[in-house]
Amino acid sequence: MTQGIVVGFDGSPLSRLAVEWAADEASLRHAELHVVTCVHHPLTGPDIDLTGDAVRVAEGTTDGDLEDLRREVRGAHPDLEVSTATRRGEATRVLRTAGRGADLLVVGATGRTPLSPRDLGETARSLAMRADCDVVVVPRHVAPGRVERIVAAVDGSSRDDAVVAAAAQEARLHRAPLAIVHCSTTPRSGEAAAVVDHAARLLGAMPVGSVTTHVVDARTIDGVLGVAEGHVVVVVGRHHSNAFTAALAGSSAVALVRHSPVPTMVVGARGRGRGRAEA
Image (cartoon, rainbow, N blue to C red; front, side):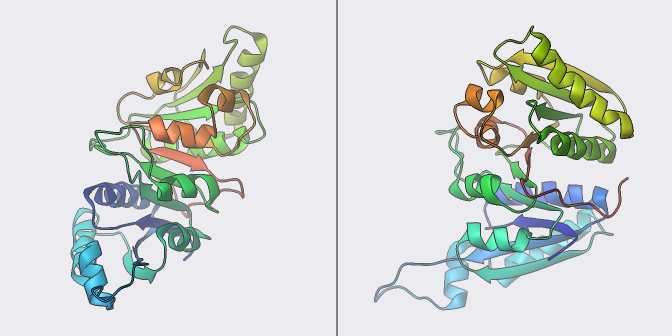
């Protein structure tokens, strides 16, 4: 699959939210939408029916479900090209393979429940860390509505160029203001100011609207999420060794995705997919 958006669907309400988000994004990008469902049933035994239909009914993604979903998406976006596919195998492997060459891979934050709001499903975690294209993780209970702001989390590393470029593209697509955020243990230092200044200069050659810069205390993730209130998309780079990472006690991308109440785009380490058109 190339030149499009791939979204994982497992029949759950959360994966439906991911499909809705991906469809809106694909419509803005004038890109094809590829809905992929995975069939994976490793258990065996005398009472286990491993026929394809039985497994898919148990996992909630029959051909009828996929066709109903395709019609729903086309009803909301009549001009959008939508395809559905079923692949056998573990979800992380299947979706990572499907996402190779795609502009974007979208998944729900599977495993996040009201009883454990900071739990992140293994599929979302693995893809955020290892997918070959940019990944958007859609959290539970995303409210519908127009995106009001794009937030780019920068840290002074070489990844900032890709993060800023991805955020600028999203800002243009959604016609939304862009906020550049840097988390620092010394938020009033010249070094912290230099990080956001550099990111702002990167935008000089990119046609975007309103841009604001923020340096927040890196000792709490609430700093970046405080800027990310409302209908927002957060963009963060995938890497491990920087001040932002230290503040979040682990991979910055995964930590932010785990806590974020808004869709979070993780810019991949192997270069960004490029949309075919922009609004």
